Length: 111
Image (cartoon, rainbow, N blue to C red; front, side):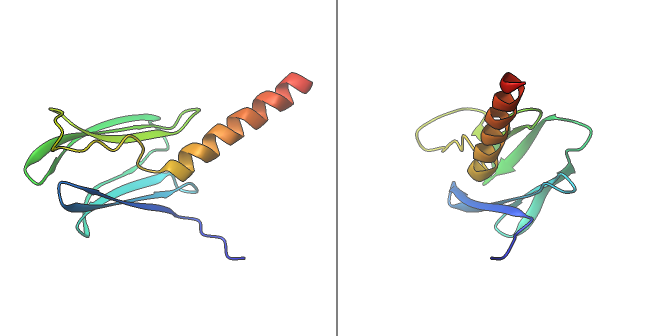
């Protein structure tokens, strides 16, 4: 069994390949479009991040919240059927944060 520290997920929006990477050890979040890194930040000191990005000349909003429950999304500033919205960039990270919150709640309830 091999342990992979970095969490990756690839999405497609506006015919662009969007690659998302998160390192839970350093809290570095990075987003690349067609192999070119457009956003990278350490989330250590700021649990809420918002950033405007251009994808295929269309403005998108990147939102990251990681305080108790993880949430990261990429939505167009003007929604339409032609412009997809990615409601969760890292679904495995979201599931893991929910499981940890449930576990912590159960342990706190038992004490």
